Length: 154
Image (cartoon, rainbow, N blue to C red; front, side):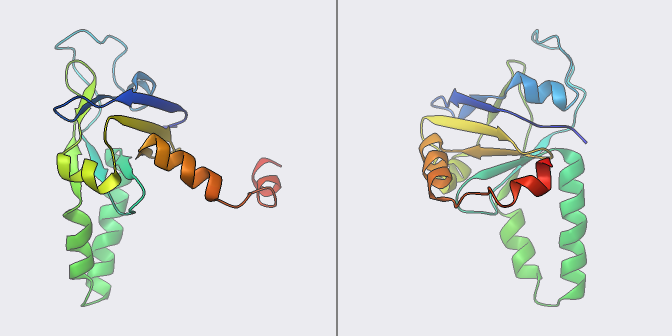
């Protein structure tokens, strides 16, 4: 599993392209050399909106686990097909281009409130893509995790 950590903010161009952080490309197995035409050694990523606040950018291995869970859920519950469709209709495969950019489809940008900038947050096994202002508002509105932190850090 890739260790996706850090915070990176980039501008979104008029075509919906945004630089994909090089630290994340390296963590996902991309080669260090970023010259045009260099091969990439990781699979396409899945860009998904399952929460209203932001997008999740999932490596293939994380998406495969989620796919399995979705299929198990659909098999276990007869009414789960609508949920599966709702999730997959909000997903798109993306792959960094030769310049290290990804294109975020307009319908996903609109859904997540991404206008001119995207904030990439490494969340260990996935990358969250936020509107920077929305991220700041969410962070300010969240209760403190001080009581939980000692269980994590020690």
